[in-house]
Length: 204
Image (cartoon, rainbow, N blue to C red; front, side, top):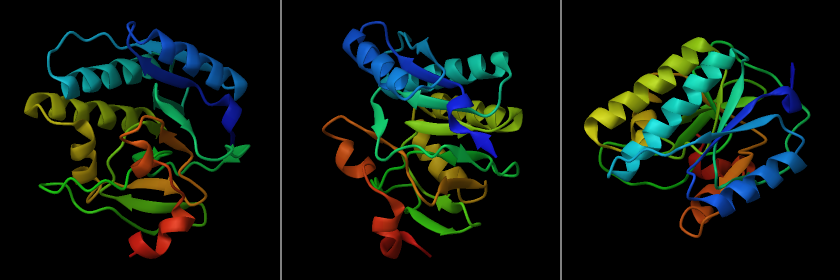
């Protein structure tokens, strides 16, 4: 059992997004979380590569700090519901999604679904959205970095490759979640939901 307020948070934010930085600092301060901003200032002309390079930078910092688990957030992440005071960690899983997306982009991405895992978590398949990912140990951190490097090599969005990996790797999401959505106009409708609202549609 781990106290949520003791989980380090690393959030990505470009220097040019000063308004988002201010809002994120206020948001995380009000949640009484221990957070650190990670400047995400890649100059790569391809947006998805810039994002993956930022994720790698954030997780590298978490590895350096060596305080697991830690939470990676994007700077548009906001709460869907109040965070629990404590959580149970499944040490055998690769990633814990505290945010998810119902968007189906087609192509090589498998469809979104959930299945029973244990009392606290669903197993998660085919979700886009990396706006709130809990990294539980060094193995998970290395896995997260490897997938982002693969996405960079292919010039693709990393969340598509995580969705593909979810078919064989163990990703889970809290049954009482997801906890975070993305608050921009495009992604809020597909990230602001609770599993108990959509269980019948996605449970298999």
